[in-house]
Image 1: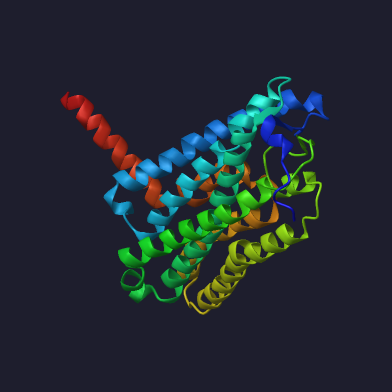
Image 2: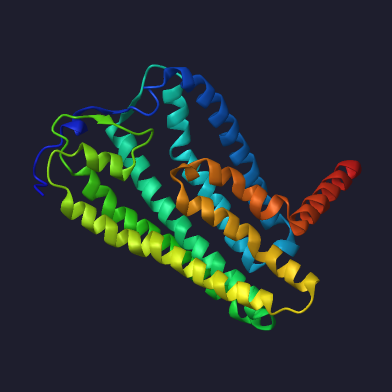
Length: 296
């Protein structure tokens, strides 16, 4: 790959084709995506505030959920506002700098989220399979270390792949056949052999996407075996409740490319807003707020 070839796209803007071939759908998509984005902001912000303000939720599971909600907020905000802007008018452009930032955030935050889901699967594995040792194993140091590792690996992946993708010469072609600056769409624009870049991307994807998925499936294999060995039906129900939400969101995470708006919207509903602990926390915070207002 000749990295010294000048990439003419740096001289101007990229054009995000997105849904421009279906103009009749753009207004409908704008309304639907705007509503979904606003609900995503409200839902994930609620999870972060409740998890931090209520001391009963200062547990490893909610520590990880706080990071997941923060990731979802950042992940959607890295692409959805630009998509809404493009859907709402004739201007489909994005600056080279904007495209570079979007690519870096998309790769980095997406990688962190896949790894964080694997961390959360391990947390549920320990909770179900080793309940008596849960708080000893999932101590604050380990939780912080696992989250830091997920963030570090995700950012490192982006630091490697973003420059390699952006350095590929486009030879004047500036139309991105996507609604965001995603790596495969940018690679398809290149006018040189991209086999080396695609090979590196594949190797990194094994570590960032495939390995966490395999780990999650193995963890849930052990969890299912442990749950089925529980004699009481109430115990089995509680154990499945503990893990069912995580498995539900993983299916959407790894099997669809629309996770950057659908999954962040569903995560608060799947994980916590239907959870008795979170409902109790919201009730307590509401009562405290009302009592403070009465005193004032």
